[in-house]
Image 1 (tube, one colour):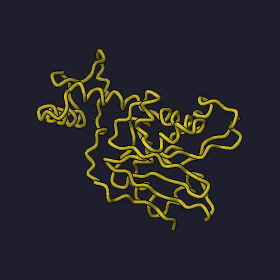
Image 2: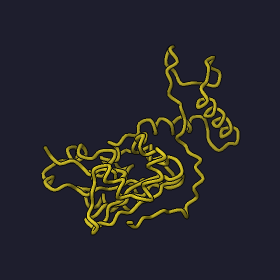
Image 3: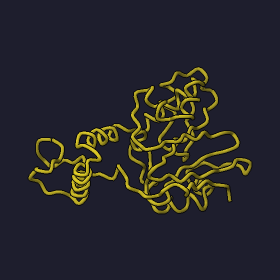
Image 4: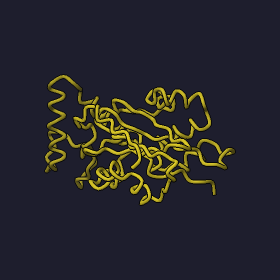
Length: 229
């Protein structure tokens, strides 16, 4: 079995900022759900509004701060992470800053990262990295958008740690034994993004063309970048 990093020394108290069903179509003029709306609330909406009220009443956050956070998360998509990786591939200085402080590097590209801490891990010819959240679905949503269904599935969360090579083969990635596979366990305080290896034959491509080769799955280690057509 390959070596893996569990990172279980981090507090795995999963008080997520992302499990909010806050965008809904109630069949009338579109507007955000408010506490005084005369509509039937789903359990998720009711939970969100109750938590929001507690945070505001305790003085921890304002209503505007909460909504801005949700808006940033809504804008998250894999393309944001792909932009960062593509810039790092062509700009060694940016790459160094990105590895040292990913959130600051993201701001250079006008990307807002709301997670408490983000770590970027680079794949090499000797090491391939895979991201999982064993307890639930911790994921850098503000950067990559919503996680894929397989990432939050119980099967992936349990098997990625126990048998990562087998899981990767099911994704179509079969690494020789000379390549070490490392598994990184996300939690509420720490999220990971993978920097994949740049594919050969891409030396003449610009940043936008490079970013188009980088899928969401590449950024959590479950795929490799595409190659130019």
